[in-house]
Length: 561
Image (tube, rainbow, N blue to C red; front, top):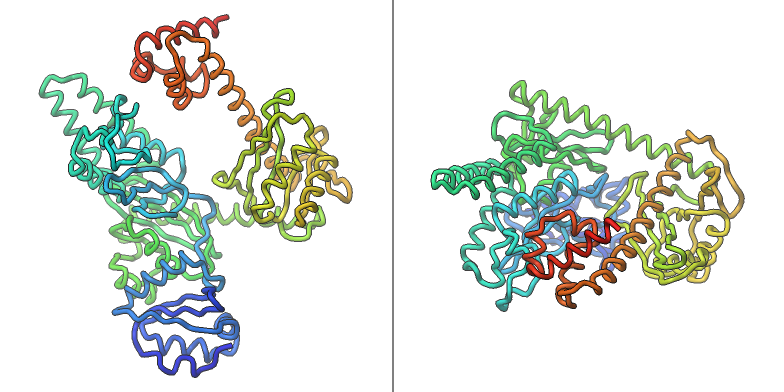
């Protein structure tokens, strides 16, 4: 426990302070006046400040020149160390980012978190939109998405021949020219989507004037694809403006991101703090994508001060269009809060009805799938607060095992020897499968609640008995949803392995296709149907004319057989 003498020599300057217990950061804060702010912690007679002072055994301070520097450092340190007494931004779902690496020849990729180096743009609303956006931008800016070693010159890959990359690995262009295009791409990813539209229109008109109608048509198609992708998000403003709308209540915050007149993202977070604290953490964390203006419902003194520190205009709506956007954001926030409350109520009911030891905020589900004892696999899916977390799904190859109980024991031990247990482990099956999972946990010295769902009558199975609920009961509906998801993922994995194995064996028999061409085909295509669905030109660029003719002839025969 610390006493007041600990802060005697701390100056009246701006900076960041860290309460530590051993090497653990338990609370990180910022202050315009460190001495004054820390004094308030020590004088507190109750609440979080009192708990922090009692638990900490040391204080570390970092002196800075001004409050803005302190704000930025505090937010970055909170994000890095995740102290237990700091309120954290909690995504209600995983939002993707676009990452531009720090390499001399940067690569661009979609990622699901801000881990590692590089510049991160986003977050975006969903994976599908982000992937489609990247595909269109690749056709314009022709950046690399591979992780090849760029220190040595190599032959260009298939992306070069498909017109998706300039072949920078083979130095088909200079590094300087490549980096200029990455700078242009960064400008777009920061929100200037009007720039890519203007660029594509210019190229289309330029080729048309030169009577190069083939390339003019290519840019026309790019423009149509770009508009189609962006319109899935909703065009909300006739003007090319960059602004955000931020609203919050009941510890839930919603952000509308509007760039170049497009509603680019609708983001929902849970955060135990005030609006100004949420804005501070959100925009310091996402410095690569700061709008010209943030619209809020009500301006306060603390928000006004934050506006000056961040150098962002934060204000209430100033015209009818902004009023409509604010109203739309509030309506969406109320809907999201309703979903969150509904999910929490279902989880509370689940705990009581099934006699669980804790509230099942995190549920992991396991299912086994195989084809007559071959290609046995397990799927592991994750539900957190009643919603799926697809980025945490896992798939396990178990070999050729016909025994479901043994398969469950294997995957449970594989998973939980290395990973933390969930609040509830769900097994697709009856009492035999539930007992197999429990036995595996006992073997590795761990324990958590395990339940199953018998398929025929949708009976919930626990180690202590069976529970039958009405088909429309929300607890049963959630468990059925989890069961169906584990089943879907496991079956898809089994089919994928079987299809890949079938395609591999087919390619072994085709003339003109040796090991190298077979490898190229298997890296790009996963099934006969996929090969037959693409253009002949694409396959010829990959494996040559003779091999393509032999391949398509054989596959067409097999499909019609």
